[in-house]
Image 1 (cartoon, helix red, strand yellow):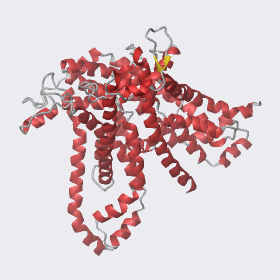
Image 2 (image 1 turned 45 degrees about the vertical axis):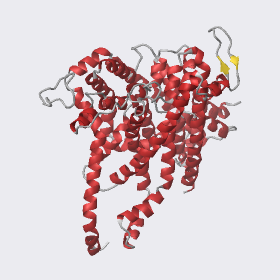
Image 3 (image 1 turned 135 degrees about the vertical axis):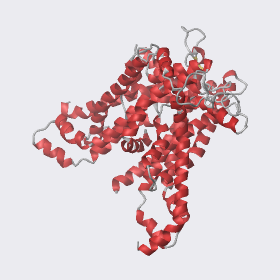
Image 4 (image 1 turned 120 degrees about the vertical axis):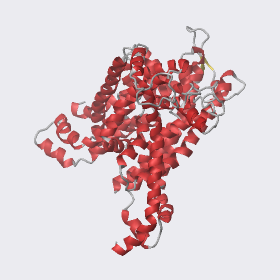
Length: 283
Length: 298
């Protein structure tokens, strides 16, 4: 583009551009507002309302966090959420890798039919099946355990499809070369397919971690002891007690405790999160 | 059979076993149980009653229908309003954040972070905004001398408040599909249009929007589909109240699980939900599959 043309194009664009910039900032602040207010409230003394005349920085307290910590054993909840999230992911990585490889590179009778059965999970998400799945968990004698929360997610159609796609783009010659060198199927997976599909593994892991970190209704239904319940269920306890006593400061402190880890991770790896979520539309 | 021929089945087996146990089996079980009425005593056998559970669900003068008809309507309104508000917002966000702007990361964070929150956490943030007298909305409206409506207690407003939280949470997530769509449009199209004398508005109207049609279709279906499964915000926003005026199907199912005598209805309601979700997922997949085929060809 010539300099003259750029010059002429620039003048009308400058103020629309500034207008659009302002709109971006305005909407962003609006969207940030609930988080900022809650963060603020979580450090404010109880019963000081948002418009209180004492909007002084001097009135800053950690009491709400102490109180929230007294109502529910957050340390235990953190550990339980970690067990739930990491445990689920580890099992998924194994099941998904094996199934993806079979569907991507092996020929066997009934393959298309089996793939269709796997796809059923995308058509009927397990969230809507919680009543019957609750019965299954109880009949298996797993009620009120970590494994009860994790088990419905051990098979993942989303992960299987995502990695199948990744494995199919690995040149088959690489596998052949490895085979000629005497590699067995495990070695082929370990040294050829898995290393070449790292971006897909990252995408799948981020989606899996964030969706299970946030999981609430299912863990609530299949557990009853604090010793296995995750963060979200702990937060629910605060939410329910707040409704009675209007202790919003505590509730905000609890909310911050639950959301902080993922939000901080997102701040650090914004690009990876957004790219991974862009692939999760079929989840 | 030699081990080599068994290998594929062994590889697929774990995934398939869990999907059968937690998707196919419960779905079938739901369908079957929805045709039965539980026995009055826990030890008794359930009675086959055909489609009577469904008839009662949609009969407003039946005790279960009185609730369910309202809740079914709520769920449709919740899904539709979510789509109508969050899809255009998502497009606007994507258009704004696809430009050159300082501190892009900060603005992108601001719009996208709600997508990373647990639904209950998101609702919890809003609970304080909606709170009576000490709430943020009350303070802001009070500053301008306006009355604060009872966001969660007014039967005509509660469903809207609950929907608003979902719009706030979803639109950033939907934005990323539009961002991906925008980035797939070749730059030179715009240069050509600029040379032809098309201004920014015309480029948006006649180039960008038509080229995003496929993305829009996808986003519409996904949003609608997700809305039917989104209920975890309700416990922090009045638990579906007042009465059932802001309740949604899946949350009502959850509330009814402990009531043994309503087990037939729980399964009938789940069947209704499955039918809706299945229809839209198949639509979505038909679309996604076509796109997948083109990707593989290309």
